[in-house]
Image 1: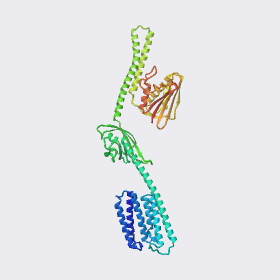
Image 2 (image 1 turned 60 degrees about the vertical axis):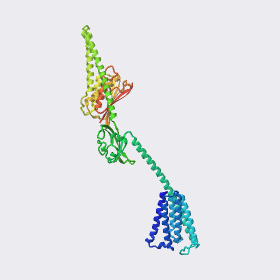
Image 3 (image 1 turned 30 degrees about the horizontal axis):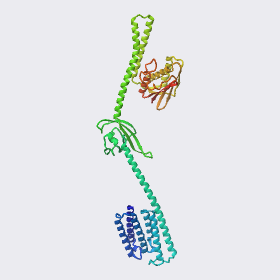
Image 4 (image 1 turned 45 degrees about the horizontal axis):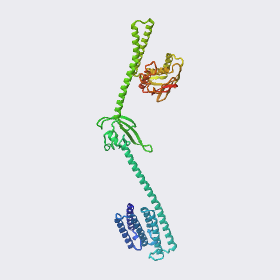
Length: 520
């Protein structure tokens, strides 16, 4: 309210100055008034009133009443100006409209109607007094009463229409201003909330513009990097993370940070592109964590798992070696006594040779698993390798009740070690034949696309119990009476060497499927 009243006082002073200045500019003798001296008095009085208003503005407590007094005095001053400049012929009847506008804008809608009513009454009284020659205001020509009446009517209409329009616009502006203030308050609250959320994040967060200059650097980022926000903001993000290069690229980084901290830290950093609502690129956002402690714990867990695995492996090796050694020892001790018939001696010799072969196979398989040969990668046709392996498998296993079904898709050329892939196919095929015992179907299928090649071995055997599904690739794990438990482990190891995956799905009593996925 105070700001609006100050604007009203300033506008009044400007208008009076322009009024006075225009009379000199256009060389009009005091605006054609029959009482030029009164015009001078009017201007002086108006300036004095403006000065008084300016002095009182900071002392008045009831600003609404102060505004009403000013506007009422303005109406009286304007009626006086109309009186001394010719009444019905005055150029300044429009000033009443200015006052109505000012009252609606400065005070309220009601004030506009009050000033319109007051102006209409005073203006009508002035013209009536002029028409009946009660006031000494001359006018040119012979005007009739209806001309005076029409002039009064048009001014009243104009004043009330102005009050209505100004009040409507003023009310709309006030409502709009209130809504804007509410939204501004909400935006400020949201901004504070966002700032609090960003500062409370346990992960480090930064944002940059498209040039890589830091805009936001939260408290967690300061703690992790050891750099204060003030030292980073506005500078290139590379000063914090030297391993980043511009232009920035979205993705995951795990790097060692040592330049700004007392000790080396392993940083896990994710960078993404920031976009506005239209999808335009506006910068980058990075979220990072100190992974040092996590990596240390992972390393400790891996060491514990490694030693546990070594212990379990050692126990399995001992078990696999002790069994044939026990049989060998028993056979040799009985042969040493020399009291057995010849027939029993031959049988014991066969057992000894068989156990020696078993022992040799166990050691050979273990060496294959633990000390793999370097890969001999070349472009090979896996369908050709599969055909040869399956044919050899069918002839070697001698199980007439088992059939092999091939579902090959197109041509399957891929870079791999042919001998090792042949070993994988052989191990999976033998495993399937053993699972189906005397009857069943082994389905070998392939799928090929631009990203990977998939080879599936699906049998209709007894399946794998869910309790064992996560153990079948462990060395020496087997549920068979005969076997080292290294076949699937060797296959898994070879596929890993080819950067592929070997997965299994089994429905006990229905089927088991081993799936090899090789990336191109």
